[in-house]
Length: 115
Image (tube, rainbow, N blue to C red; front, side, top):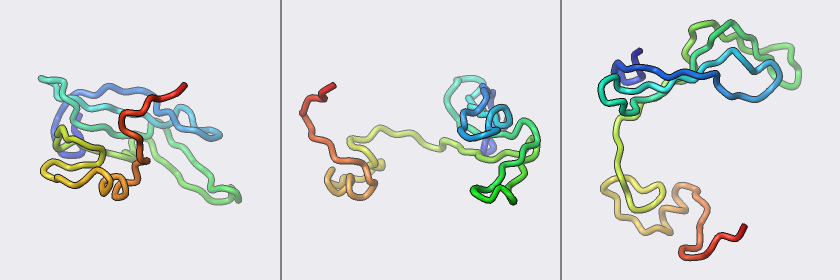
C-alpha cells in the first residue's frame, strides 16, 4: 500500500462511517502504517463500489463515484509536542493570540468541569 507521500506501508481498513440516505457500504477508510515500526503514515478513503450521490434538494443532478477511486489521501509528514493548542514547533506566541488565531474556544485554566 502506498500513501499520499509515496511511502509504502500496510493498511488497516474498515467501512467509512458517513451519514445520509444510501450512504453505507460504498466507502472504505484505510489507515496506513509503516510495515516495520507500525508508525502512523497517513490515511485515505477509497470507493468500494460504483455509487451515485444526488444533489439536494433537487436530486436531479449529482456525483458519480467509481470503484477504486481515492477520494481523500493524507500523509503525516511531521510530529511534534507543543505547549498549547494550535501552536506550531518553534512558535512562542501567547495563548490568547493562539486561541483567536485557530478558533479554539477559550477555556478557564484550573476550573473544574461540572457534569
